[in-house]
Amino acid sequence: MPEGRNAGLDPTRWRKQQQPVRRTVSHVCPPPRRPLTVADIRPGMENERLGVVRDSMFQNPLIVKAELGKPRERSYSLPGINFNYGLYIRGLDGGVPEAIGRWNVFKQQPTCPHELTRNYIAMNRGAVKAGLVTAQENLLYRQLNDIRISDQDDRRLKKEPPPLPPNMTFGIRAR
Image 1 (cartoon, rainbow, N blue to C red):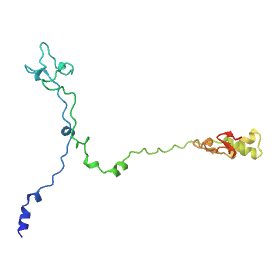
Image 2: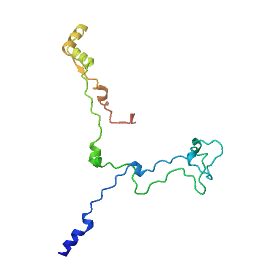
Image 3: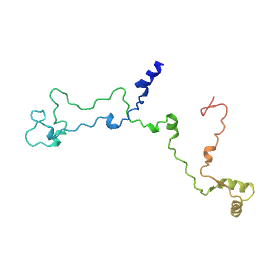
Image 4: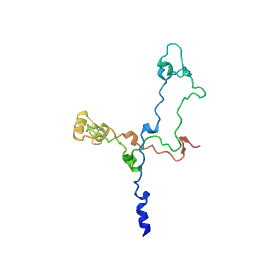
């Protein structure tokens, strides 16, 4: 039973589980460097000037001198190898299923009903087969047998290529 008493006093057992630290951009990225101002310059510094001094003079990288013994910094150092660019948003990380399932796909717009065009070729062919040759007979035939075709139905694309003779190769006749 002594193990039971010591188990209740174990501080690691009752410690709350530590929640991950939520970081924001201000924690991850350092703030941009504040340019030098006239108030920052003290006597004896490299960038001390005589005469009229404006704050804009300290923002020009060609005028501002580097501190003595230090190179002029032109960039920021990169974060460590374990750094992840971007922020982790806890509520939206559903993995691959959520990424695939949340695509914004444009829904097809309902097609407005438009009048189909007349197929005069088929109507004229039918009139000739019926033996009608005058304009008045053709007009009456078209009123009785109105054949329509959709604009999307392109007959030229549906034609099959003409059959080639077996002795033709790439359009050149064999000798």
